[in-house]
Image (cartoon, rainbow, N blue to C red; front, side, top):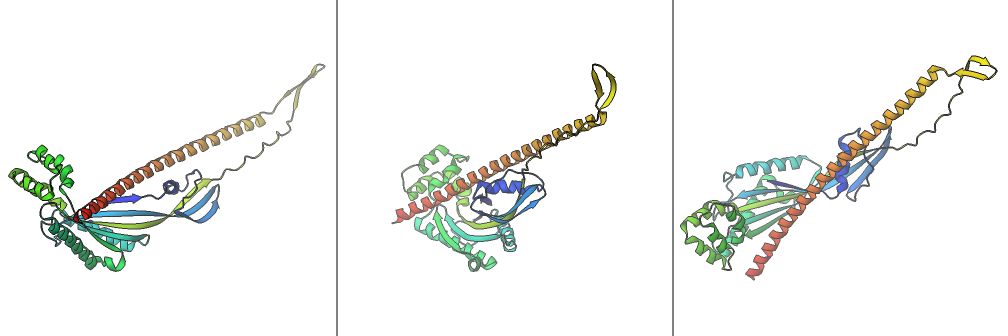
Length: 327
C-alpha cells in the first residue's frame, strides 16, 4: 500500500510547525489560498490566529489475480494483508468527518502473455469484479464517484523486473523485450527457451495480473499560529537625584561619596536586561530552525507528489498508445 500527500502550499507546513508547540514563537507568515482564517485574538504577548487547512491526499492498494481468472481470491499472494489495510482505511474514513472522498479509481491489469483482445477483456473483468467487491462490502458506488479502467501491460513493462532478476539468459531476454516484434511474436520467441519461460511464468508475470485501487480524498484540520507581538521598548527613566554626603570640606572644594545601594540596583537592572535579550535571541533561533525543518519536509512531500503524477501520466500515455494501436 502506498500513501501520497499533496501539500497545496508551503505555508501549510509552516503553520503546522507553529501550532505544534503552543508556547513557541514563530515568524509571521501570510496564509496561502487554501487556508481559511477562523479567528484572531491576543493572548498575553502573542497574537493567536486559528486557520482551517485543506489538503488533498490519496492511497493506493494492489490486489493480485490468478492467471486467466477475474474472480478475487483473498488468500492469494499477500491479498489478505492488502485487503486488511484497505478495510482499516475505509473504516477510519467512515468515522473521520475531516476526510471527504473525491473519487475512487479501480484499474484492472493483465499480463502481456496471451491474445491481446482476451487480455483486454480479462483486465476489465478484473476491475469490474473488484468494484463489485467494494460495492458489496462498503457501498462505494452509492457513496462516492467510482471509475473503472483497464490496462494490458506490454512486454516493455517487464523490463525493469527482468533487468534486476536472476533469469537465465537475461541479456537475450532483454534483447527480445526491446525488439520491434509484435507482442505475440515476442512471446513465441521467449517460450522456445523453457528455462526462461518458466522463470517468467513464476516470477515476472504473476504480479502483473492485478487490480489497483486509488482513493483520492480531501482532509481539513485546524491549526493555531502564535506570533510574538513586538512591543516598543519604554523610554529610559531619568536617573533619580543622588543624595550626597559631605565627608571633607576645605578651601579647595567638597569631596562626596555616592550611596552603595543605588549603585548595586543600577548594576542589577543592567544584568536583567542582558539576560532578557539573550533569552529572546535563543527563542527566535529555535523557531527559525523549526521553520527550516518544516520547509524541508514540505519540499519532500511535493517531490513525492510530482513522482506520483509522473507515474499516473505514464500509465495514461501507455493506455492511450494501446488504444491507438487497436484503432
